[in-house]
Length: 586
Image 1 (spheres, one colour):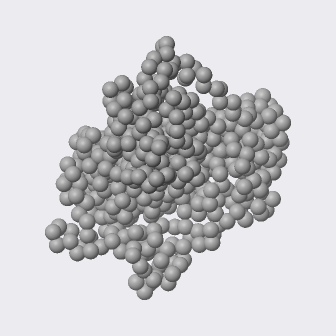
Image 2: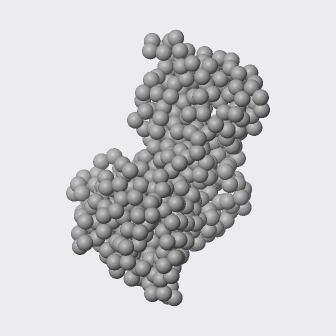
């Protein structure tokens, strides 16, 4: 298209549409109205109003995780922008590309403490890849283009754009197609031939090598390459906390998950016993790695592949650090190994296939509980058996997330949604709604506890208003369960502010406090209470059949002996607390 006259706000809206943006999530206000008006009048972008700005950021984040594309959210100045900060922080921690747009006071008034003025750029810089203010509307083309390139190239991440209301109205002349056509090629670093050769040498010397798949495998859209590499090498795959859905959990080469809490027993065992670990685009984050002594003893060697050279050697010493796009590295390694015509790793002889299925089953945690109240493990088992293989499950932080990470199998990339770095309560509903909007034909479930639901409760109304048929699967133990568990274990049962029970005389369940089913119904969302594990699947079927947003409140066991396992000393080989605590006095 030739140059056209338009306002800066119109340019930004049209640029985003040209880039394939389909949705914007948020809450409009006076300072951002020029942008919202342009979205309505000039584009086919759908605008989704939420009940709290943070949910808009969570939806943009969840959309990006589910699709691999850029999520966009928008809000007004002042509190609108500050309510984005938690969502930006979560995306920044996990390298998620998204763009958050905020309104701002007029240029001439910035710094004079006017109504709803906030230094949002300065506040956002520590938790974004970049934060910009449009100080000159005539330069809006360069402004939005730089923001997009920044968010989507190299190590990806969130970008905040702060738009003074007067600068949004500045008229400019621009050719948007020419602007997009000037996008530079993302020249990601690539593993050298020497890197591949050294990796093969280390594999040849290894007796028990392991591929450790991190969250960057999803970000790089490299899950197909991971599967091909594992099958070529015939060595086990273990996933980190953020890499849980990067490899099919029923694949013969899948050993499990690694972590002090978000783990499977056989996954940890495989990592602890390995003599060579190849970390593929992971960070060695603390909840996955724990006490790093496990990685520095008994001659264990570490190869770390990461796009960001600052991550290599930051937590765990490496024998070989490779700064590379992980997809390129895996393709090169698989090709080089294939060219040898023989397995270099000691785990497989030529012509044989490794199958870890029986070992996984042998080490699996128990889920077939028949006691009541319902055990969380049984609730998650019923849910997993019901859902399709490609269903989305989003998570909030807390004991529900830990149980899910220990028990829930995933089979399709980008379906297990959680904030790995930030660990945000209230995040999962927004992510589930965004995933469902992106893929209407697929199931989308928010797994959470009652503590987290209290932090996203208002946005059940968002699902109702926009008719987004997500399932909210709330495991209610009327506790801040994970923190109560830690109070019991580490603080001699000195319990404070973790009991969510209060007497609610207006509801039938007066001993549990909030009646989530009635609350959801008050917002126009169907719901039902489940107290027996045999009723979980029928409730899920009714939820799916309804074609509407649906809340299922599952009453689960609050007993302290029903504790999720995690390492007592922060090491992957530490004993699990739930195996050692004596609850006989309870």
